[in-house]
Image (cartoon, rainbow, N blue to C red; front, side):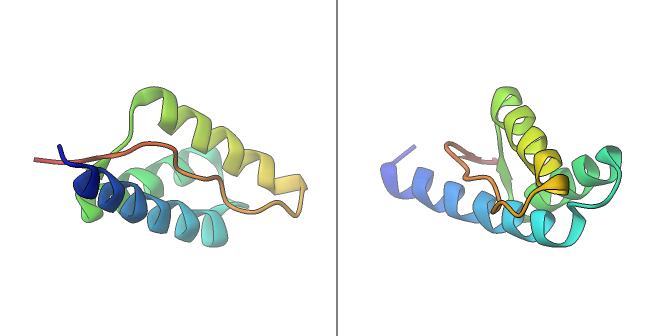
Length: 79
């Protein structure tokens, strides 16, 4: 995978995380996870299990705070 492909995957994943964070942060954890997974599938990118777990935990942490969406550190194109 080239650096450009990796960067494009990270940017696509970040858009999904931003959207899920802004619209779903007050939802149940299962709903947030489902929305994240669906968004990533539509964007044709994937996160490692550790990255997905970290992002979901940070979105959950937004429920009581005025923090911004988590930042995606790594993602890969699907396919």
